[in-house]
Image 1 (tube, rainbow, N blue to C red):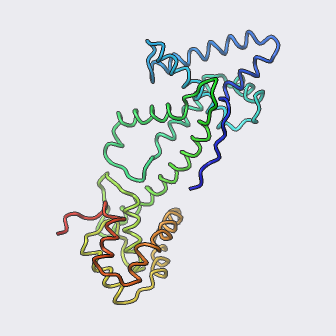
Image 2 (cartoon, helix red, strand yellow):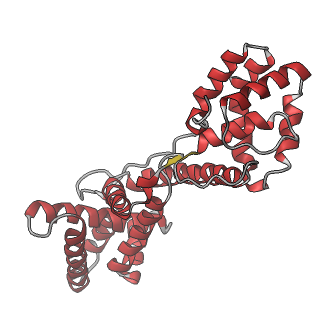
Image 3 (cartoon, rainbow, N blue to C red):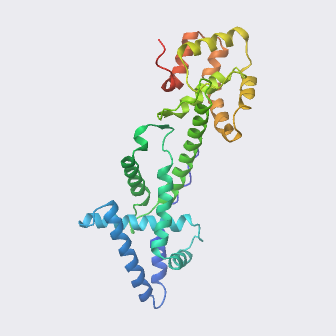
Length: 289
């Protein structure tokens, strides 16, 4: 995935306050805004840092700056200080803070990896994850350059991609020929790899978990009957909902130069089975001896 362009600048909230300072008779507006920002900082300290220590208040202050700046940035107002100030004053600091924090919550609910386990569903771990993400993307100093919004957009794109991969794997598990696989632990890349390996045969049933003997039988059948893997994959794709095709096509491209090449080169069953285990072993049925 191509990295997003990272813009380095002072936080959007700081830019808005600098624009306010240039206005005449700004004192009343500044006093009201300061009061609102102070209240938000105290709430952040109570929930995420420590309202009883100077360090905790300082951390909360920086998180407030970053979260409001994230809210302004992702609202896509004009990229100038005056427009950012107008947006802040018309909506209120608390509302803009909530805009930013909702984006953080959305990111926290998306998977950072393409594997999941019971721990990922634990409410305590989910709250810890939310705090980690909040601190990572919203900590901002008024005197330093800030890239939180650019990094946020990059992370959001990556996690949405992870979600697509996981949803594809979940669908394949649900359609598994021997019945839906219901356990929580999931290695989505492994599930997709397994399904594509067995999908080479085209009209074969959908396989989302395998035994070693299944893989050996598939390899032997492929090599004996000279199955056209590309035609097999195209036929197999017709069984899959179109929303998952992009994920599967991308994985096919990766497999062409690894497992598929070994199968077509008539490598030994042992060599190919070892390659399959390397890419999909996390979803192998370990009951097979």
